Image 1 (cartoon, rainbow, N blue to C red):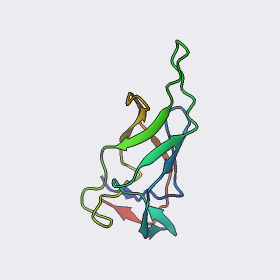
Image 2: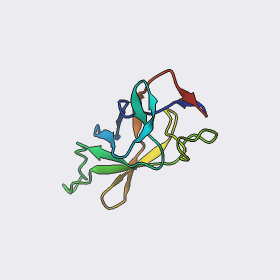
Image 3: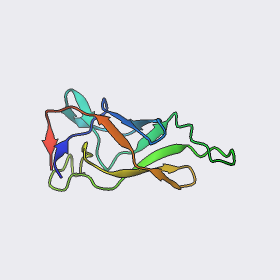
Length: 111
């Protein structure tokens, strides 16, 4: 499904309010002056405070993107779009829920 390109300045969160940070964006391709994020990079989560009912902390630590762009490549890797789905994972690789992409730049769209 087409959608705006996800870039470093975009806002994304885990289901518990932690901020998604893109550790290795693609520095050669820019959207609104910010590097585009691809499947080749890692998206880490900071500030998730999720705790299980028994008191054990189980914060989200990374996002595993599952449906990137299919017809567009950025330096050989499919880019992440605003419409891309994924799953937030804890340090023990336990699924915590889907990330929420709140804002992206509106101009560059990919499919």
